[in-house]
Length: 294
Ligand SMILES: Cc1cc2nc3c(=O)[nH]c(=O)nc-3n(C[C@H](O)[C@H](O)[C@H](O)COP(=O)(O)OP(=O)(O)OC[C@H]3O[C@@H](n4cnc5c(N)ncnc54)[C@H](O)[C@@H]3O)c2cc1C
Image (cartoon, rainbow, N blue to C red):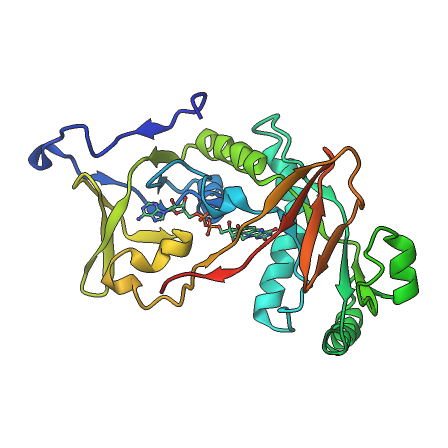
């Protein structure tokens, strides 16, 4: 991150609380993951003065670890406002990636890989058939493949895998998260966002029902009428008022393998695990899902 103009103000600077100035900002974004950075980017684009405060380094937590697979058509999707939001967000990606290229030459690794979701039992077959029907009716790009067609398309699947068919989702794309985060961080800074790393927010301050600012780990405060809580898994820990947020941290682990030639070019997903090949011939396997805490 050395090439970026990021402020590194740590708690160990020996600042005495009385000498710490209160700054002001139109908006304070707490958390420098993909969500916080993207929100800061769009606000700054609209000429809003934004300070983004990150307790560690930007883009190093969940957003860095993610496989980078971009889809809205999975089994947890159902018609409604959440799906509309997911779809709209996915459809904005192409333009967004192009826009980021105006700020940085960094390659985000965005590509259309497509996804084949394997159907391995009767329960999955009925869920997938139902999803196929309503998504096709809604005009989404989705197809059903028979077991035979899946085996022809993916000849390396284990012979004893009980494949009953599969859903083909050609619009699924993938990014390389660390690269996207690097490009986005550069864009955010060029848009004039003040990015402060190694600066934990310890509290969101309020006066009655109005937000007044944030308190930082070194005792400093930033006065602002708007705080965007983008602290990801830690969002509910930003003080008592946030503790009611329904955030449930889930820990996931993925493994990156080097191959000379991945067994597939499209993403393969199933209830027994997922395989994400990358254009550089590396393959991600995963992810585990472990509910942890709160
Ligand atoms: C192994 C794995 C694979 C995944 N694969 C995919 C995938 O393929 N596709 C997909 O869409 N999603 C995937 N995800 C999920 C995706 O990574 C997350 O949904 C997304 O990154 C969340 O972004 P975020 O900005 O909310 O969180 P984060 O990236 O975790 O950012 C939150 C930030 O807030 C900061 N913060 C916390 N508390 C404070 C504080 N008090 N003060 C200041 N800063 C604070 C943290 O340090 C952190 O940088 C995956 C996740 C994992 C773990």
